[in-house]
Length: 230
Ligand SMILES: [Mg+2]
Image (cartoon, rainbow, N blue to C red):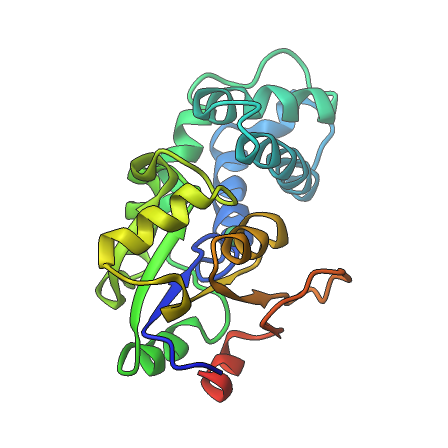
């Protein structure tokens, strides 16, 4: 591996355990709003449907086909449709989800010890397509703010991964050249192709071992593997 100075991390599904934090929030909201009254769906079906719909909406959001407001506010309407639930989602559900989920602290396996190791050797940063307010809350809730010198969100960069503009913005903030940095992320489309097209090396975090054709600098199944290579 070349001598990098900087490591850029993606946040959701790479460090912050979106799946677990989100599922915990949805289970609380299912109880609070007594969602079983809206149809014959279980908490597991509610959670599973949320994640399917959410992934589809995020993919549209990343490609600038829908905006933040649509993603945040229409999400549960689509979930209602997909579940065949009665009426409309209770008012307050979308707002409560957005308020509670980012306060959850769970990180992916070995995230903290890996950051402890890397922080003494590299300057660490985040590049995320999330919303600035929400991402800051997640970082603080998980107790990882102190590891990162900069946090670049698509909101403050005015561009989203995989656009080169967000990577150039993040590099310019720290006065670094692309070859001095490497990106670690779980999304081939946004993190990996985005970093590569911007001149950065890229590590694909692929815990689910999905098959792909992309050329990557390194592929890992567990964050702890980074200690072997970096
Ligand atoms: Mg991600």
